[in-house]
Length: 628
Image (cartoon, rainbow, N blue to C red; front, side, top):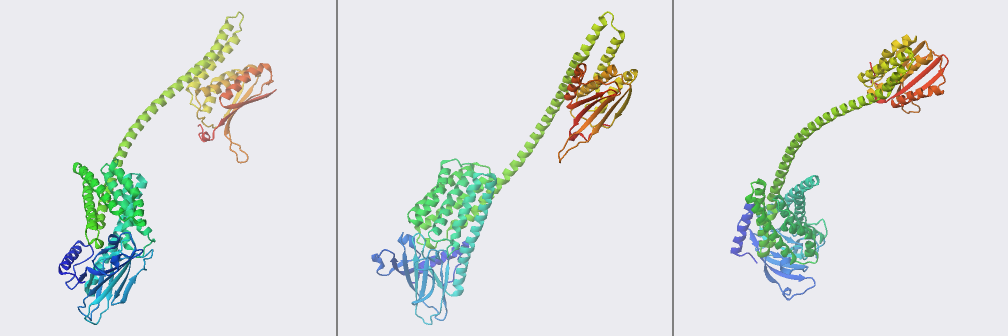
């Protein structure tokens, strides 16, 4: 029944240490009594063992899973509390009790939680409980009875009961409630936020270290959230499998993150940790649903072994590395592994395991913050490296761009020189085929006896005019149609006047023909030269006119059309039959030259009027660029 003196002293020392560590309790006054022994009566579902026939004395805490194994049932704990002051109510503080429970005083039920057997959502085994026992009015001891209903693998049981006055017990309960619930919420929020941020970074950068850390923190957040609920959000056994699987996966994931940070992610140990993370849900399901309770200690031992191996690897790298993140990671790893080893040892060897406050739960906060700092420092260095790389790339790109521009300028100059050379070669070819042939013919004519001097002179003038027009075309502004027409007038004007032809000239402002070269200018000059030569030689005209203008585009039904340059040459000569054999060759040459210019040539002739009309299409982009 009541606590022994040495046990009470040890308990008070433990409570004082917990208060100093900030883990929930403060040192109570000497009037506080800690009940560590009780009479136990068991009811095991499906079994009737001999030891359940009569009550037996047991020491608290009583961990159902460790004492009874994979069996459901009920446990009735009875003990007496001396009534120090019959007129003062007593308060009871129970750090852990569950899964469901019922509390009675002298045969009268004081309070209860959940159903018997526990319902799928009843789980009070992690929340501290506080009860007030009314004043008895007598000096007789109070007979207390706490009945629990427990399910296998659900961590049911009863911790020691702290009894005392309300002003003594209430602060203990409130502090325990604060650290259990508020501390649990804090850890859940911190881990959840850090995990979510890390996964967002992983979605952007696709680096595995952010995935390991993000999933590890989120899983730790899920397993920590279990202590926040007395009415579970999921039915049993799923509410048991989910937090346990999250815990079993969080440990190897964070261990693999640590290996990845120090550059040891491609090792057998890292691959083993990855396999353990994948197997965590299977192990949790077997441990809770079957339930194979022996599987959990083996899995925890495996976690401890791989954690120690990871710690050795990280410390070995950190001791040889000058990188600050490696050293911080090494300290954080030592902290978390030692706390985990301590918790596993106490859980498996100490009789006080059921009421144990896991150190790893609070050590994980510092560990998570250290890992978050490692990630932030890594991202800062990556960002700086990217910035430096961008500067280097910009310099290289500027250098290459300058080299490309210089090469392009050289190529452009070379292309221009090649174009000029090709143009000269074409003009030389035209001179050779046209003017050269004409001069050869004149030479033969002059060598003939009886050759007329006037005929030779006429043909020589044609040759000279062609030569001058060719030279003009080579020096003319490319695409300037008006200048090309002016060159023809300048060269042929005196001959027209000598032939008795009065020329009327009317040239409007014309656009520049982008893309024209001296070849196109020469083609148009030769076309007009041939027309004027035929006029002087055969028309007997006394008056001629040349009109050049820009004809606006005419589109129908919303269709667009290009503007055209119209050049019209007319005379008042005798006219001729355009279909006649003698006229066919000259017109064919002129139409060929018009086609080479991308235009069309039309002709109409009758006695007293002959008109030749050349149409040159002007693309829409060229129309506004009018020559002066």
